[in-house]
Image (tube, rainbow, N blue to C red; front, side, top):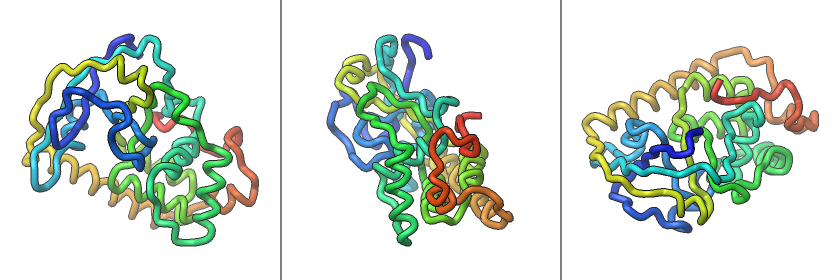
Length: 230
């Protein structure tokens, strides 16, 4: 990563001063300031079917930040899953799902608050459904990993610490037109929904979450897919 990068924050308002401690705790990686290096993706995240939004632009100094890069071979898809299930609200439909949430956090969890910055995929819209289906023993870990790669999820950059917030500088904004970017956002979601339906029709011969728990599978098991960005 370059020492200085440009990041964008999609929002329904102009955010010229990102505030440490503000926002929602039930985002993917907990409380933080969620950005992306893609201006277009920020615009997709900013709009709804009813309103335009804003892509706020910033420069971020990264040289001395402690960064968790989830999309590298050092981590598996279940590290990402464990962080997401710890912070997001999932539909826990069965006792298996309840146990699975605890197992993932205990065996694959990472203390995100130990880092200044986190880089990883965003569990947005239909992609959240994949994670929920895996938690409820409906798809295998291999299917989950493949769905995430095929879906071309947006990579988000999340500021977590006061130190990280001290390194970001507001540079301006662009309007995100709903007439353009809501269509693109919906197309991404529709593609993910269709991919999910296709996956459900497959004969799955892999590891379900119940298999992972029964086998005491941990992060060093070679059967667990690594590196979501591949």
